[in-house]
Length: 123
Image 1 (spheres, rainbow, N blue to C red):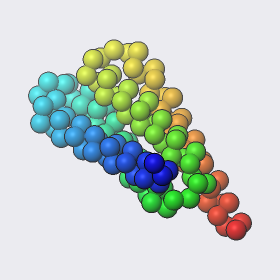
Image 2: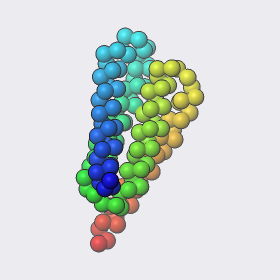
Image 3: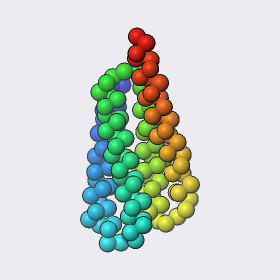
Image 4: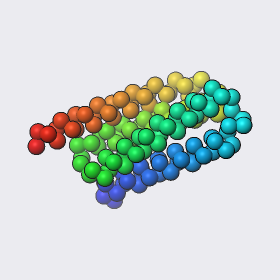
């Protein structure tokens, strides 16, 4: 499978699940979770949705200079957003310890976007 096609599929799956999790939280979890945990869950959805859109944009750009960005954004989605989903639903602090690793992954992904952009200008 071509790299571009694979990343478009990954972005689509991530965007789809972000919308599904957002709808689930609005319709089902809002009556179950306390307000502070709902906010944590919503933060996971927001970051997943934003970074899914960025993944799609980078995939459509089709430039291999941004491959590390895509990898770190995907890692961030998994580590950050999904740890927030699990933490807010279970209340288990173990998931909250994973969240910063996802945040760092997002930051590293953005650094690689900046580095990739500088390399584009050199050519």
